[in-house]
Image (tube, rainbow, N blue to C red; front, side):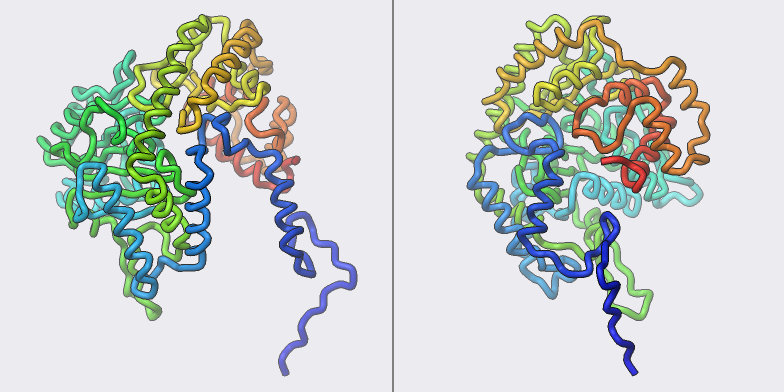
Length: 499
């Protein structure tokens, strides 16, 4: 006999986050989503200078969103079953290649984001022409990259069994030093990295020189243009940085950044087909269906691909040219305005619409400034000190930023006055205590209680009240920062967190 279905308790009360006994209506579910989003940072109008990219064009957003939903249930796992995904990917990759030194025949892969694009570029380097991949007994391969390169390269190395060698940047310009890159390249180097631009400060590394050095040593060179790859092509006077540069063998470009596509959209391009094949993964060593993946993911909805395609087609080259010009105009206006705020200075000389603001006096703490700015309704992204670069606040300026940059400058000036002379209220000796803690011995409940004892409440308003946390992190060694961040994320996702 078949078992009878379990009717459940007569009056079920599911735990928080549990499954309800009876299904809920669509209106009810959407109302709860709206309630949950009330604590999020806003995604429109440019008041959040990180994470979100707003073109300020409702018709473009609608095109991307509707195309996303149209292809939501299409599975990109098997392109022979869903040839629409092949057609869309060819168009998207071809469009990106045409703007980044390639053409319609340039091999590339549509991915879920910059980290996945970088992961595939690193895998391709490891598995194809990298010296460590072919030299017997050479040990683990190494990636040579500037200290300002995105952590996604360290993540890729961690997952793929490689090591990283970080090289310094110029203390004033914050650009990678080619001489340091040359010294770091060795027989086990599988990849050299340059940024166009680096995310923290918006400055471009000298791609031509670095790519030439890599080619001279027979090493592959990847350009991380995840953040800048879809804004730099539309600007004038940008130094060469793409596949047109001799020695550049791969480049990554996110379309959910300055492409303004729905999240989950990036492209990695390769100089030749062999490299793209090196990024693929196939397995037939089991009794099930044959597995061939172009990305880290296997099953994947085609919504992001369709959303990116529709956004590209809706804006066109002229639309992107206008948005890029507006974003750069906002960047220039911001930098000019900051010169009249005596407590602040701009780090480096940004080549893209990304700006980092540091303190120009000993009396201003940038983490306190971030909290004061948040109280005025704006979010700037704190960045910790590293390799001689002081703590600072990052701003990503987009197509809508120009309309609000004067208001932002007013807020910065007011917040700088409010923050002057204030230091975060960090208990004396806390950093030393944390350095000496065995974090692995603490469960999530104990860690949440520890955070509460120093005034950190999980689940509070987004983007506010973080000066104490950032100050503590800034005083710790990077390895301790990382361990603490892992525990913070674990605690945030535990049932012991408030909110």
